[in-house]
Image (cartoon, rainbow, N blue to C red; front, side, top):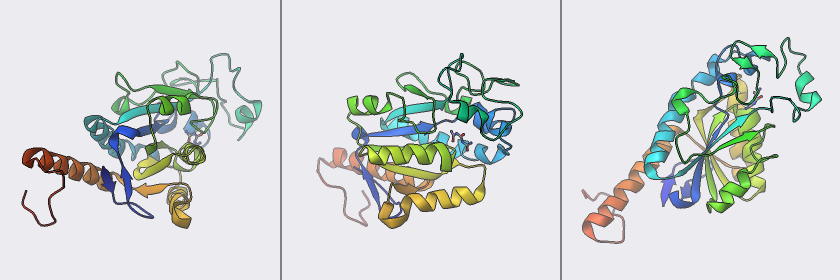
Length: 244
Ligand code: TIU
């Protein structure tokens, strides 16, 4: 068992039944010239989440957690793009129009893909989603159920849009989710703060919040306890203050 200090209280998980969900770390959101900037946003805010998310990703891979990634985007013929979504914000360039990183938010385009630092490796599925939520019109729930996943650790962008929607959807489907505050990013500092407050309010109304440092600390402590048990042949973690 891994225990992570979190709000509103400690988040405990078994790595065998917990997945790391990496939400929409796409060039279209985190770099200039993509969909995020087309909506009038300053993309530099989101880049701050990439470093912490990379540490979490590498630690989860090493700990054997199932890792799954999502991308928001549409078919090349835009047949799954609701007109309301295309028009909203009255942007100068729309989803599907050509931008410096290819057609905005279209599958197969350079801008639609995941940033190099966080790119999936073999065995880590990518779920392509047409909406903000990772469960809507995707096979994410089926994949998680096949893998016996009960809890999620969540990194991604943006905190108050796709991360929030996905965590709310996860909550309604019976998953416990832990959101890591510095590994999620928003274009708006105020929304970042308030979005995290909302998740953990009311006793954790739809999830838990921690950060990459406390998450990594929890993984290291669990690994040490397992190593000690193996070395001494005991089935318990050492007592507090033990030098083992
Ligand atoms: N605009 C914004 O904040 N986010 C999105 O449109 N999609 C995701 O959050 N991935």
